[in-house]
Structures are given as C-alpha cells and as structure tokens.
Amino acid sequence: MDENAKLAIRLSRIYARLLGERERLVAPPKYVTRLIPEREAYEAAQPQRQARIAEIDEALPHVAYVIQLLDPAHDISGVKPVRPKVPNRADMPNGISGTAMDIVREIDGPLAVSEIVDIMGERFGLDLSSPHVHR
Image (tube, rainbow, N blue to C red; front, side, top):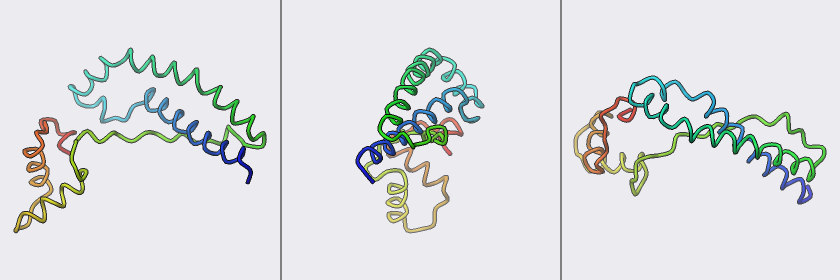
C-alpha cells in the first residue's frame, strides 16, 4: 500500500470522528437531556454547539476532497460516524478503574460499588449529587 492510500485511511478516520461528533451534537444521548440540571446546562451551551456544527460542516467537504485526491478509489460514502465518548471528568492518577482497584486493595473487607464510589468522591472532592455523575 502506498503512502497516499495510508494517508487517505488516516484522514477517513478523522472524517468519521467529525461525522460522529456532529451526530452527537445534533442528536445527543438521552441522559444529557433527561435530568433537569443537565438539560439546563445543555440548553445554555446551545450557541457553542451551533458554532461547532458550523465548523464541522465547513471542514467535512474539504477533508473528503483531500481523501479523494489522495486515493480516488476510496469510497467516502461508506465511512461510518464514530461518536465521541464522554470525557473522563475525574482527575485521578490511576484513572477511575485503577483508583477503584487501589481502594479495594486498601480496605480489608468487601465493598459495594456504591461504597467505592463514595470513597472516591471523598478523596478527590467529586460532586456526586446527581445520579448521572454518581453512576
């Protein structure tokens, strides 16, 4: 495989991520708009979302054109959107699962998942007031 085809594949991955980000901005997951605090925050961020959608709409044709330039045989219509994952909001040295395992190792007895989450919240000052964040 030549360098142009490899670059076209890399760009098609970027294209898929842009499509997925746009899809998520247009049709968010239910949990974002289900609870009132999240819904209010979501509605307040409407101008930023519209600006990002406009940026993506402007960039997509350019990325598709470059992909076609590099590899004319590449089918851009077959690229499936890759929706972004929710960013990890907790700043923990070992990540969420690593920190949970550290807590399990430190405590001698068995712990429920909710107890582990409560301990993590205490240690790192997390606001666990909404059920979505606690989950």
